[in-house]
Length: 319
Image 1 (cartoon, one colour):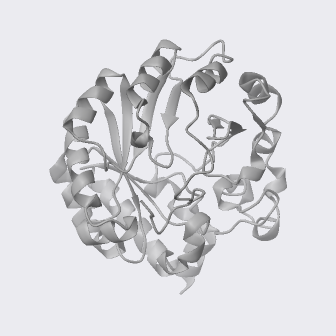
Image 2 (tube, rainbow, N blue to C red):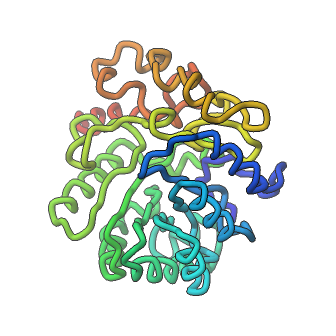
Image 3 (cartoon, rainbow, N blue to C red):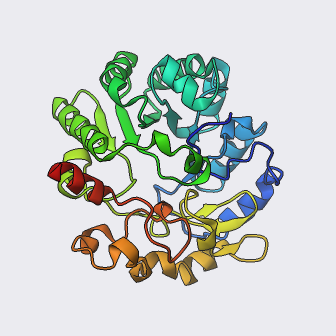
């Protein structure tokens, strides 16, 4: 696909071949003592494009980890659903960005909605699958969120995460998708109101600190867990944290470094975030709560935050 809001490297023709499974497993095996809830999340791009996905899943399980996946659902049919469950898939996140017209528009695909609609039905039918839907809220789908809410409940979806667009990747060129201050407040008001109904576990995603709305729109206070609970291996072998953060924060590479040693001995920029106190954050009274916002919200290390969510809320409340 060629999604309008994509925050990854956004290239349709990758410069890298798919990483051989054996290379990834070798890095995984450097972690000698894995906690019971240690989980590998396969993301992309689109994981379902890998021909050996089930083999990857089974081998990850054999190597002492659980595994899950984030997908657009386009290739997720009944046969794939069964084969992935048999390969040990424990959790699944599917992207749904509106009802038919708006979802297809954002995904640049005329039949993407029908595909993910089937995938949602299949995933919601499985009691052993930890399943949720994630939605990118933008200026076109904001006002159909109530209809989308009803659609998900009818589908039997139990959990729904919503997020907005940070101007990184391809989204830099689509700033008209970004909610203004009042629209952002409307989104948080919607989430806050629907959480009271308790018909679905709805929350604002791990995007950024939202000040007065913190415990109204999520279960606990925001904290960016990149490099704290989350490490990643990128397609070229780079060792990083959340795959969505800037590549300048990479800590090493599995083709020359021991992943476990890098995790133990580096990652200082994630565990001491004093460097984020620049620009808008420098004199902010909320910094002790926010800790510089989500690290994917910085185009480069040591640069100012791109979007301050709390600032958007405060402006909306004053207007």
